[in-house]
Image (cartoon, rainbow, N blue to C red; front, side):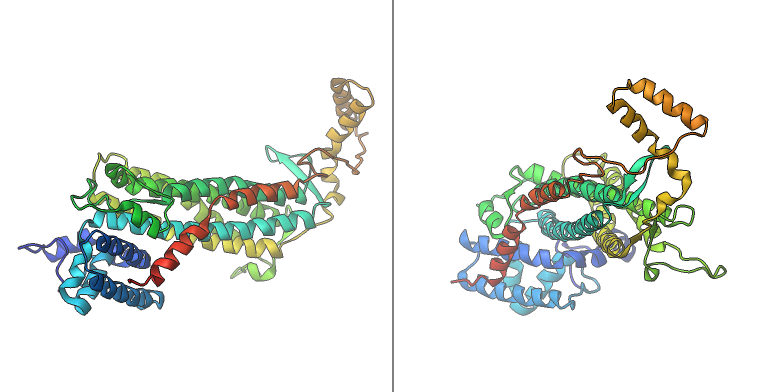
Length: 449
């Protein structure tokens, strides 16, 4: 059995080890690539301050690149008896390079090691979420323009209220994603700060060059105060979780609408047959299971910030093992949200709408406000016009004029699709993902002279 990084002259019992390691071996596979990148930056810095020889750095970097290729091929495993990804990487180095492999831990702790792993991994995941959000946004915008002339009922209190349109309905969710993207950008900016060099949360007596590792890893800046860097464990995940939750909130609402509008009693939209499931007893059924599952998964994701908050809620300053449990709810959340975004984009693109909803006379009364406004526009006081139309409705004399003409910004006749697209693009331009991507590429390709 491999020894622990912290092990001295005693060993723990198997039951205690099982309980304390928990699911780390499984969950740390998420972090393996980030762990190697963090180590490459750290040892490059160690050589610059004289804690590694140039030939040692060259050998360590070469071996870390080999490990990185193993990870990218999907062949990396954390062996039985090895506590976590950090231990596995160090074990692989020492097997190849002997005691030289043990030198990579100088000036750092597993505390700042997992912090930098989480930051590197999370910023990459946020980029993937942003890309999926943009795909869904584009599909919603396309459908908004495609069906902008098709009217549908708008509701308040689930009562038929006023004319709406599919242009407005699809476009509303597109604009909602614009605001969600602002949360994702804030989460990315808070994530993209370097904690490496904070060690166990109190710095190091080695003359570490934290600016150098910040630049090597493509962070915007560092978490300057070493105590605050450690306090960022849990806080980063919670803040990111709020951003994921706001996207999930938009998706859950969209999914609810789609399920409701797809039902026979509404029949506003039709989902593609291949995106529905059947019943074991009722041959006519075409169930919107994808959107039902999306609704449930996204509602679960909206609880993620509270889960993280409750895990870290009563912890004072410093590291505590409680924080390990956050991985269990945080790391898998990204794949779940990305999956929901992909499914939503796929179905939205293929969804068709009922272009004859208003042929049904049950929707005639939603044009009453249009008639009130027409009377007011030709000089009738609004309250008098309201009363007149109301009396006509009660007497059965109301005849709707379904030729409506809305012109103001954001209305049926002026969707502001281009302006909404510009909002989204402005936020996207503020991420600067290319900086981190280029830094990681250079780090991997870097040759020691």
